[in-house]
Length: 411
Image 1 (cartoon, rainbow, N blue to C red):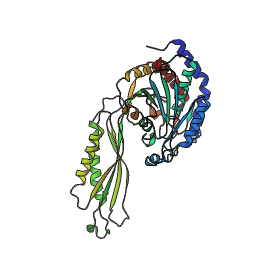
Image 2: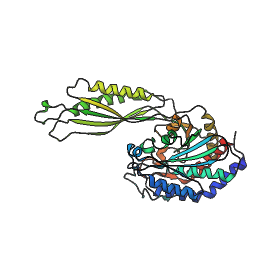
Image 3: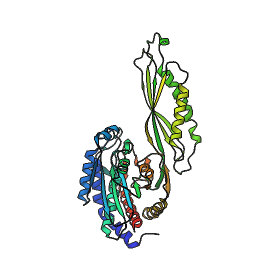
Image 4: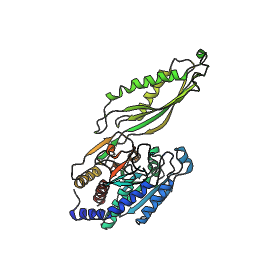
């Protein structure tokens, strides 16, 4: 197994010559805000489409119906697809998302300025994952430049709702039959090849009681007191989660966080309603339905026996864990030896304690990995934090790795 030296050299020479253009394209993508929320992402999709068309690609625009966009808490969403058929054979999708989290505070540079210092570009989305718009586009350009006989099709899937869950991005494209890939790369952010990641369950707990004047609390039913009992049970449960260990390298144990809480009327009024939302991370070995049932039972037990108290539990989101699909090992092997050759060091596989759009491809039976431009780990990139950054040489290396892997996979 391996790519011949002449082809590898041709790919490297092309990408080396294109480095200034790759840097300029990434800067343009960073300069167009695409924060989600609020999720008004169609303008970024238009800019990305124009940049891709300038590279000679035909770009399909797939606007998501407004009712679905609003149901997913967004304002606008247009997904982009570029298709290049080299011949009969497998379809390989390269998926990156253009929506990003809001910049937040603490930046030393303009988060939309695409500033470059010492070979490092700074900006929101520069690593997660606007960089892989460039990685995947130029990897495909490198294949076209080779002019070699290949068997299969490469598609770019550039989507805009990863930060909202991916239901109207990759999941929608697959469910609508707009694409039917055999293999998929999802945007990455480390040297290693990601083959598994956590899932995530978001639940909203609403505790209803009865208000009363603080001078006569006995005439009401205190929703906050009831919520406190539920929270205590949840935190006691959280303390047990460290005993559940994943066998996937890079993933440790499940977690639970209560991230939002609201309630009360005034200081002198018994609270009649309290709501909170919890985030339960699922390791790949866990069954999401079993976990959710257990949490619902725990909440019901903690709330039981409190007069005048009613509790409702709503599922806000379920992102299933991502793991290997049968047949993906060939893709992993090809990717691993090419990454090791380009990076000049052994590259292995890992799991990550996050959730990504990759799960939508694997859930559809697509042989999927996460790989793209990034440092040795997400923390080095300041992903989702101030001063998000990307070492530009990592962008060029990742593009070379993806191009070599595509060539070998389709040869």
